[in-house]
Amino acid sequence: MAANATTLTEKMRAALRISSTSKKITEEINDCIAACKADLANDGVNRIDEKDGLIIRAVTLYCKAEFGYNNNAEKFRNSYDTLKMRLSMSQEYNTPIVSETDTVGGESGG
Image (cartoon, rainbow, N blue to C red):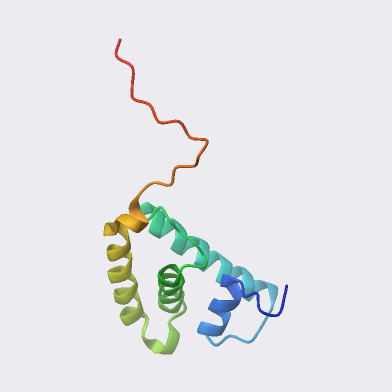
């Protein structure tokens, strides 16, 4: 990994103030990230870009709530839920992603 390239896992490790790079802790962080992405998608957030500041913030809040960071799990969960709601209502984040190869067509009556 290049010196300036930071993965979402490493960002969460820093946000949670976890210096250990053990495989088990890394797996737990990655599981938490995956759970957050699934939760966002489940509530209608279609654009989950790991480089997007609001998505990074949502994942950070989610992980801090799950890890019970500074004994403020409820505070972080409430902040996450508020951000998730705003993302799910934002056209920028809730519009389905359509690739150039997708075809747009209506149902045929018949």
